[in-house]
Amino acid sequence: MTASTIILIGLVIFLLIAFLSTFKVVPQRSAYIVERLGKYSRTLEAGFHILIPFIDKIAYKQNQKEQAIDVAPQICITKDNIAVEVDGVLYLQVIDPQKASYGIDNYKFAVIQISQTTMRSVIGKMELDKTFEERETVNGSIVEAVDKASDSWGIKVSRYEVKNISPPQSIKDAMEKQMRAEREKRALIAESEGDKQAKINRAEGDKQEAIARSEGEKQRRMNEAAGTAAEIEMVAVATAKGIREIALSINEEGGMNAVNLRIAEQYLTEFGKLAKLNNTMIVPADLSDIAGVITSITSVLNKTKPESSLLPKL
Image (cartoon, rainbow, N blue to C red; front, side, top):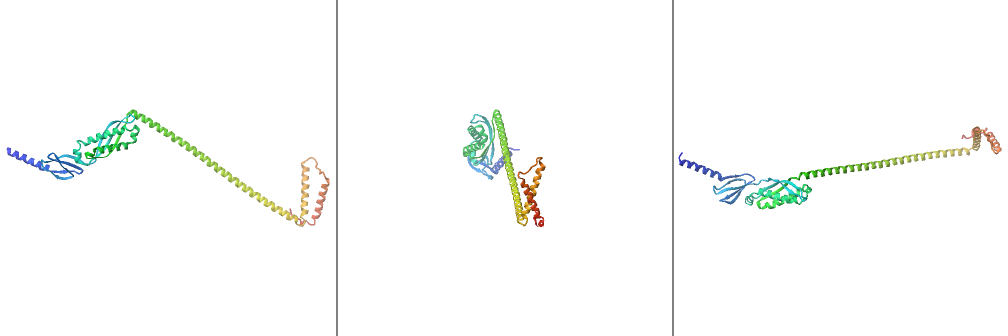
């Protein structure tokens, strides 16, 4: 192969490379920074572009997707002088590719450093217990600080998330004891509240039972009183009716003689009972009373014989 042939082949290859480097395809969500003779020329967005060989070149390629950058763990001192290890994740996006290319040499390294310094500052203003409770405050403070500093770099920080806050083992043991004591305290309080409520429920039940019992006793007495009243009323009505019937019978013809006869019979019957029940002979103080009674009985019997059919029944 002659020298002229080699030169020709080299020239063809050079022209082919130059021709191919003239055409550039930019992917979606990407931006290419073009420099012409070492000076910024333009920014190529997604699509097909043609460059001038040996004059235009791609200086920087920027990814415009949202990126998650891991912030390495670091030691922070809290307000109560406790050393804790904190790490996190930072989310950012390139908004201006030109500023991201020329505003700073390495924007990822820069935002990580700002995130760590801001985190140390924020944690240093809090006590240990607050660092676990105020994660949203820490995240917001870091996002605000980094976003403000990166504005001239064409970077937009969307959010920051604290992943882990790790205190020393001795502090972990103390916190575990504290949490155990707190749980036991809550258990005792819950148990006492339950016992209190149980006593209240039992007292309320006894109260309701006593009220129900007294209401039942009251109703029973009312029912008994009503029954007794009704009974007395019925007896009174029956007695009044019987008295009226006796009065009507007495006022009829021969009624008074029947009454006298009845009284005399009862007198003699009761007097005879006294004589049977006692060994002592009972003699009336006025013997004439006996004679009078006998005379009255005889007189009544004599009068009532012819009129027996007319006597009312007692």
